[in-house]
Length: 455
Image 1 (tube, rainbow, N blue to C red):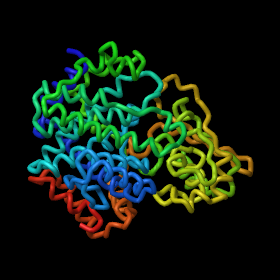
Image 2 (image 1 turned 60 degrees about the vertical axis):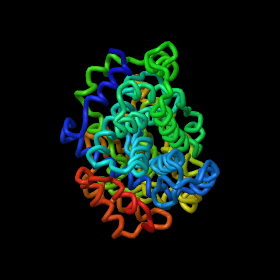
Image 3 (image 1 turned 90 degrees about the horizontal axis):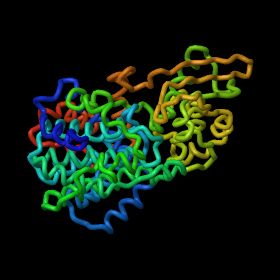
Image 4 (image 1 turned 30 degrees about the horizontal axis):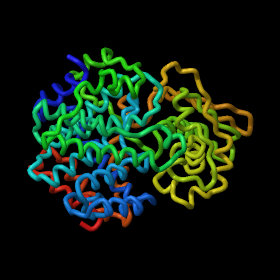
């Protein structure tokens, strides 16, 4: 059985009752996390422009935009909500696959559930978990250094599978939908290399493409078939013929990748998190402050150097700052933490932070894996001559070092409070309770009113 047929069979073979309990628990947890992050994303300074563009594309009132509560056609609402999930770099990630697929999948799934009605929490959990498997297994097979923006493209394919699962599509129609989604895929690393806000927009565009592909297939339009292993399939074009599907295929149906996702404790590129973890831990252990630091060296793979080794410049865009090891680690040194507000204009104009950021560098450690986020090692050189070093084999929030439940809840509440305007704590608590009992809901439209600031 070829790769795409293996994934289609997997999506069709399972439902809520056949998911492992750990996968169900992970789905509840990560759907909650995604909703919280997406509500917070309503505060992003690029949202007014995106809302204006979305209204120009149509003004039907089918699906709610999280946080603001405005109504848009399903494809446009999926685009905005996916962008809101991704735009602060706070959404969950698969550290090995280097994919943030929930940003496409959950907005598409909840949008479908709102528009169609009658989608139970159990159905939503199963569809999200299985769609995520489509996204992550395609990513795990890849071996070439990333040139196309994998989170957006794999997320779009996963969102398409999720929609088809929710609609109860047969294997043939699911195959068509995935082929049509493949025909829509977009996103390159150029936006990432420039630190452009278009990085997150690429995720939104692929969420919108998933809705379009789904609707075309449901209407009976056929799509290409061998979209992964064909001569012009995903692996040939986007992984330059280097993919090794045979090395991951045996895990399909045995390992549910939702159990291997990671929380993000900081609203920054995941590649910066080891630097933050290490300097915060070293400060706690050795009692130094930012003013005592002469230099910081983060030893990491070539991928990390490429993703977040960019220089920090005063007044830089928040998208670029979130992808700058120098800015993020300097912020952690000065504040002992990194939070949502640390990427607002006032913070991005703080001269002391950028002076410290100049003395922070990423050093290529020679890791032969072109897709490795870790392990990393951090050296802090103090002005008194001491050199402190800490190895970081597992990032905070990863399966090997889970984010504590209290921290997960605190993140969710902080996200809701940071929306524009802020969500009242009572509404945020009610939303959290509803999401934690998601598998008990007969119709997940119950969540929608709670997902807006004003109700």
